[in-house]
Length: 165
Image (cartoon, rainbow, N blue to C red):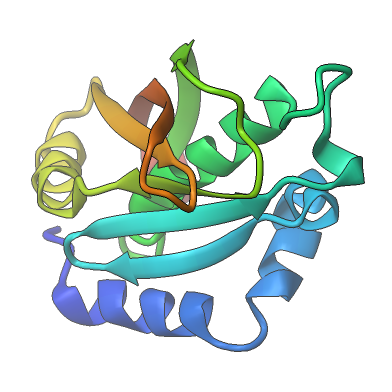
């Protein structure tokens, strides 16, 4: 079955609505506690944000790397998660993460993954392949001045779950 734009847009609209914090609280409570926000979610991709504060700090007076990875992972995971419906059931497993940090993360950091078109094609291909497939999704993290503070590559393995249908 091919994913449709209506499925994507319905999930996106709910995610961008006022109750996204409930999704985080239920599915990713640490992201909720750390303060991860969803800034953008459309056909082109996603953007999350995380503000440097006491709860996500490290001893060096910047954002803890694990908090940054959590916000970056959400940016990629949502692109895949939006396709989970009754008709398109599949499992998602994060199998690899690469991260590079280039500057202290202080202030409000935005994590962008402009891979919406690639994910759409990937899901169509993955659903047709009973063995599953993997996709590498890059994320760039920038501070309020637009300076890159880090970049990430998340490798997701996905495959259909025929037994659950």
